[in-house]
Image (tube, rainbow, N blue to C red):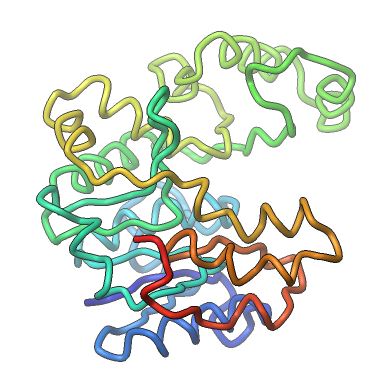
Length: 282
């Protein structure tokens, strides 16, 4: 199986924590192949898009790329900062189940799907539909809507300052107001005509697919459910415990077969110690 990931400047130029994550995937999965693509590879794989995908923010590049790779080849997608705790073969089949597709998900109340790890068999209908939805969405380049506010938050000074700083006017404000009322507005017919896109645009496309296509909803409903908060346990205890963080790492690592890290943070050696396989929650 191919395990795909991406770092725009290439694996050799990735930060130390990313290098450690890549190495851990190889060490734990010698029977599988880790494939780390760069910006040059990205343009080759996504050459059918009607504009230079390399002009988009790196996060958007990666979002489009991961789905295309899995549609073409199947396998696994892992974010560059996703640290494996267990060999993939110990949990892959349990997670993929009968649907041939797995992503971590949020609480069932809204069932938002994460994409930092995707497992998909070749030809999986959900991945095929999502790749087509990506192509339908990216008909023109867009500007990242990067105000650090959730659409349900009250508009405040931070929003006003950010809008003025970027020289944006009524269109920016209109996008925000409509998004605030409707979480899926950015991927609606009207929202697609905007030149802005939100950070979680692909999550919204996935939600839209499930809401509008019974076949896609059936796949999501049948998918193995694992909550994505467990994959952020190591980050959570780091933020919550301060200097005592290293003491909590061994227990935090056992909460999920993978843990999401932050490449901008220095991580102690305790984070990269492999716990006994039988102690990790699958």
